[in-house]
Length: 335
Image (cartoon, rainbow, N blue to C red; front, side, top):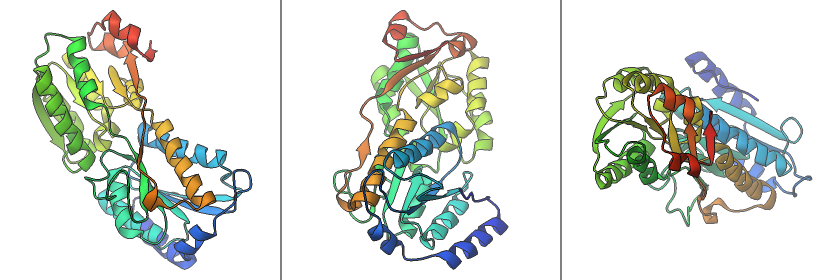
């Protein structure tokens, strides 16, 4: 597995290497065939915006589904994994590199990476995952009929259910702080939904935006609210420990957009399983590579089931008593 270092020199070297060994991506995609256990050789390029547990879980689920479908890394599958470390310029360069590579299929993980890959890679199948609103992000024509060479899975959260958890934890709560990256389309979509849900719950919303992970701590510490909500924002989730620390200091609950953040120390979520989301994307890849499925007519898929996950250790550190009815309803309790 090749990894791209986010430096100018490494990027340049990678571009030269890829252009030297590049072939026709369309030809590779059309040549893939066979069925599970008899799959022909394939090369898959992966552009991941940055590393954090949710995106990593999506990637691992994707690769697990490929293996279950007959594509085993090191045998008949070559994986070119490139990580932008949260830098948009690096993400754009990665997309350009993958467009010049011999990959039969490209996976983009997270909205910023997906936007770059969709612009650059037009001659072979492209899949995305961990993208909240692929239509708003300009990736597909519609969820039902994506069009072009692109489809994938959305991680649209049950935002209203997550905001409702604030009142379930504290019926007297009157405000919620929301921290997100101003440059992420997926976050902007979620924040608008959160504001609508908060209004329905009688909660005042205080917004704090960041442009990079280093700004997360200051933004979190500046809240004077009854709770904090973090959507599935890549840069904020990458710096989640700073938000956890602020919630513990202020003795208020931290509601997260997905279960991995609760495992790391947020208090609660009604959220997605990103490993399973990645698996669903990997199953789509197998249908494309082994069966010749056309991304243009493959609807964007979403995860139907969500989990109520509660971290009791986090609750204790934040000075929050979790009502018994929430504990009884929980799919998973971290003690």
